[in-house]
Length: 144
Image (tube, rainbow, N blue to C red):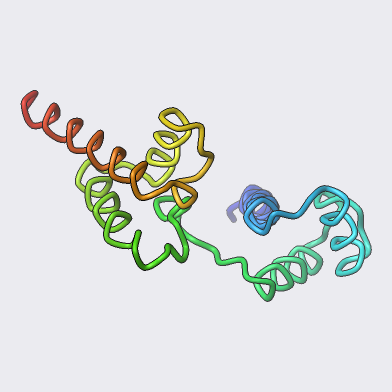
């Protein structure tokens, strides 16, 4: 019979990671986060959560607007302004063609402009990111 413990531990680790991702995406500071944990599951740390507590906390965070996304979609701007949507779509196409995650474009925004997330960039900054991705695309094609 196969050992079920590694699966349970991996599942627990994944759920705790999701809780921390939701905390960051929803912009919860540490005090608010710990108060939420106590209100929902009567603990002050995610490490103290049992499986029912983790489920209750995740359900609560989802009700507050957190959406679970795949690793490739993590970092994708959720609701870009209508005037920026075409640029975001172009960036998405260039990332997909290069088989790169959204974190790559967020890193470009951070390095190029000191802006933490792509969705906080101006139209001019997004245009420059598209241009940089196109230069990268051309280089990759030249290499073969």
